[in-house]
Image 1 (cartoon, rainbow, N blue to C red):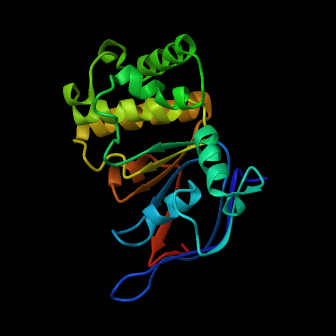
Image 2 (tube, rainbow, N blue to C red):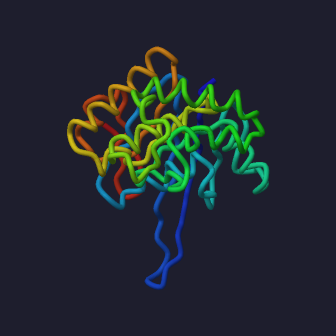
Length: 224
């Protein structure tokens, strides 16, 4: 059984100019351990599709099964709990909490899960070590470069040992060196820990490193 299975997923947004179909009947499957890039130009539906898989947006139609559970049918509270326990997110804008240190940002998900301080800080430090930032554990986001902030975001996404990580344009604000460092870290985690990564991107540097490419156009998968 696939880790993630989408069946005829449709997402429509209402606007003053009329309804916009961002995702138009997508069916696809993702297996555990994938390192996959969902690619296409801006406005093709990449982020919307990622948000649907992650339970951030509810589709208007279709089913999204994760480990056999259809998350579309979950109530709001159930969906929040499911995301917290099973899905890691890495966003283009980092989304770190400004007043928290790198260590505290990394441990934040574990705090929400009710994990004790000693255990969550040990796990957070282990992950900061993995992304090469153990020496910056007490720095706040404003004291870190963009590349360092994104590496903290990856550590945070991994903290709860999620089933998979969704990364929405994670390299969009990074220079070439920071991008290569970040991709090296994620590729190593994918290989050693079997962590599943699904990216939305139009960055050729990410596309070149992906082992599977899923091209989108006008909200639909383009058949190769």
